[in-house]
Length: 199
Image 1: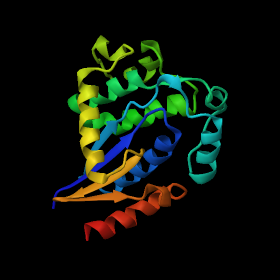
Image 2 (image 1 turned 90 degrees about the vertical axis):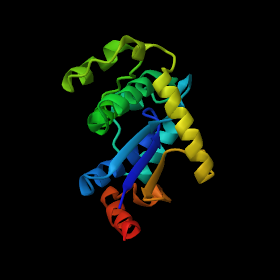
Image 3 (image 1 turned 180 degrees about the vertical axis):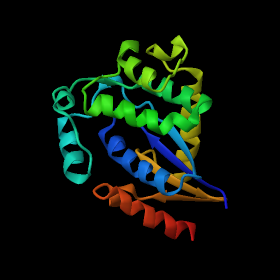
């Protein structure tokens, strides 16, 4: 049986941050499952999640936010560089992608690091010994990130929704859209739901 998990997310989206906890649980429970992290690059520097969304995520999930983040939650966000980095990582060193995503989300949502310039990424790059090309750290999407967006658009046609975050489980030729909202307060509960789908 071939199983894959597809996570459509934006690194700067609080709901995506809360949903990453579910991906972590599934990765731990099913280490052999291929995980595809598809960054949707929604935040382009013209809007933000906003403090009201952060409050809603705090109340409806197990996610924690640092004061350094909540202070600028209403400021414009730009996830372009993170989308570039994650697309490069998914192609070159996918085994590290989920750990790097967790580290980047900690930098953003706990430490308040906006991830807007190359120096903002330096500590994570050093921690994981990563040497991405300089084109990653420009305010335009790389070809790898654009290819990801094309894959996401194709998947969204299949599932008939453009909502994100989205968790999709592929079991052989069957695709299941997981209702991640049911598990945000207890991320480990999604493991039992996926076991039912696998059986």
